[in-house]
Image (tube, rainbow, N blue to C red; front, side, top):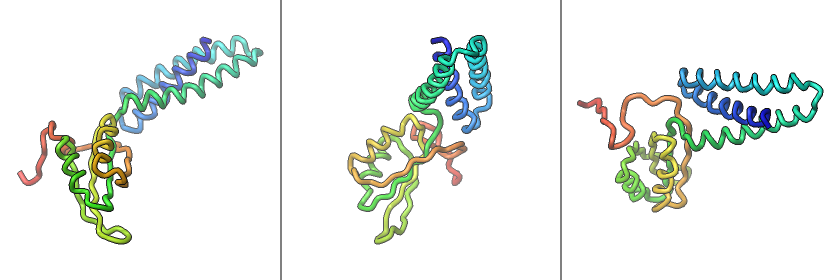
Length: 171
């Protein structure tokens, strides 16, 4: 049981460490990496002390696989970082844009050309933790809106929500 729990814990730490590292968060990635390797050493030392017990190998592998699932679950709950949401409105998107703006989301609006007709596009950089609320608001008035969501590694300058200070290059 110790081997299984240790592997779940260290693999979950590893998932979070990788996400922190890809977002450029060096110190937290270092701390998570330290504890990940420490717990891994505890688990592997138990196997090495019972090298002929094949059951330990299966428990080690099951803990690793379970740690992946649990780590992904944790990462979704933590919602670290920002995402870029791109929405393409096939039909009139003005009402959806109004709803999103009234709820504090800053949007960049673009007139674009679709395959058959002109379309409106919006972009918004938001915290990952706000992603579900954003999509729910979008779908209130436009349930068939086409949207994509991409991870953003870094956000610099500009504005994110009405609650933040707005940096306007014209001032």
